[in-house]
Amino acid sequence: MGGLIAVGSADRSPYSLDTNRLWFGNIGIVRFGVGAYLVRNPSAAAMALEAVVDGSITLDVETYPLDRAADAHARLEAGGVSGRLILTP
Image (cartoon, rainbow, N blue to C red; front, top):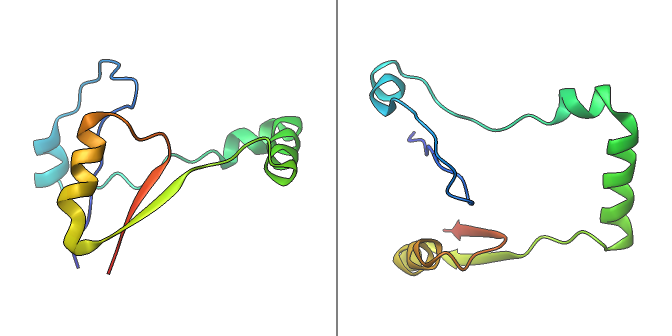
């Protein structure tokens, strides 16, 4: 019954977040919701879906077994990840 909070940005732009407020306030960061944007901009949604269907947008996904979590973290820290790293049981 744990949770994971990911804080940061891939481009290392400056940010400020009081993590104690999250921790002690029992507050979690769940996700970025693009849904409202797409509802207001249906042409952007259509373009994005077309790009996924025609293969012009791809997302690299690599899986690591949980016992290799240290290897996955090392890859992230080295800054050479352009897609997603997923830890699996």
